[in-house]
Image 1: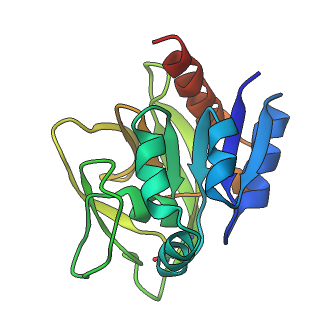
Image 2 (image 1 turned 135 degrees about the vertical axis):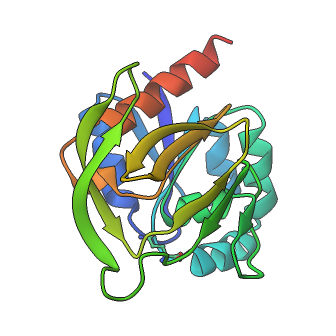
Length: 194
Ligand code: GLN
């Protein structure tokens, strides 16, 4: 069994914990730096990225996350994706720079700030359909050459990875579809044997 940390300072952590448990693995709510040592991987959930940054710094966890990422996988969803990106388009917002992508916050505008739509994922060598839940979602505006796209909404990349870091702009934890969480668990298991 692997132990998956879910950053639980703010936002949508409970549904991620349930998704991990539904896949038969252990979830650990991470609220302090010392909780990270028990985790084989970490999910940074959706929420409000500016609030998350503030709380992480207040809890002295900002640098701890970078150190964690050097040896263990991280999956950033939505605000979590913004947090781990290289830079935030058009804003002077801090980020952990764990994956070579540039992200634009709230990129779908007011009219459609939250929606559900078909997306395509490619996690097992072939393209598959999935339902994507987007909530005031960011868009990935630039992917570095070392970043592999794994999911699309139209022509927008909405799921991608680089080495140990997986990012998605949508919320699989809000559906019963566990394919993305399952993929992250496989990433954690592969990391343990490397
Ligand atoms: N709009 C939020 C932000 O900019 C992200 C939304 C989410 O995580 N669902 O941080």
